[in-house]
Image (tube, rainbow, N blue to C red; front, side, top):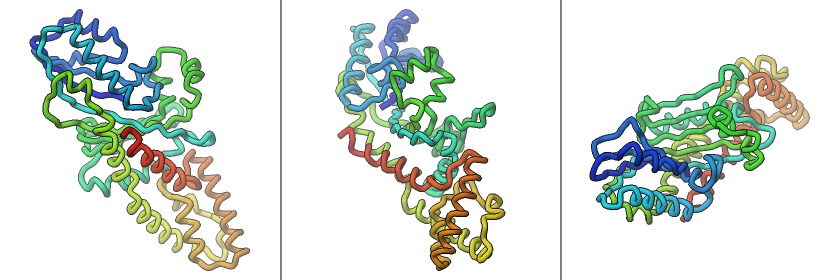
Length: 332
């Protein structure tokens, strides 16, 4: 669990000193831009409730319930006589994938292009795919898939980001000390599902006992699996790529040595369809093995030159999909 945005209706507007008192608890932020006469929007951070910052991973739903209870207690301490009701606006639920030591977040841009093709086919309407790039270092930092062309005006969105890169940009403390406390931080790929919630208002006491993860986690994880990691569309993409490569390799046989390969490689191409296409050419074992060796060497050169992933791309997609699938019933 990462954050939840809620709107609280009070008997009257919060005073500045009340907001400051509420925000003295580091896990609560009050929106100053969308205040109404008797309503305020709050952002609750579960990692900051448990730990010092968002690098803390929430691993059980009990921590979420404790945080909700404490949030309600704080509001009642501030306004003991108010009749307060709560609306849930948005929930963010993340998955953390620990990248292999020899991979960087930027190398997964091949996967991000592949997932964009799948997402567009699944959503079947105008959708938005945006990337944030560090131009100085030519490194991807954040990728957003949203069910709206304007990624800020969404009902559902999925964000992939390099958690360590984000901390380097925003963290005011010592990042090296942070890494000591969280040794896997430099290898964390964060996959965050955000959904706007439409449900009737509830009393504060109901929210303090509301199992958000039990209610929403499975639905959020299925959204990623169904819309970005759909196996049928992934296999269709493999078959489509295999047909392309079979024609290309067939035209190069018997003199195939990998020349001009870089001209036909697309950002979302995977090694498996190439290998499958080579298999279907029914080459003699010696010729097959020689061409596969040459192919892998050429692909490795392209990977190194363009800082992308081709050879391990398919396996990494499946590993990330497996990590998400494991979260389906984790909090039940």
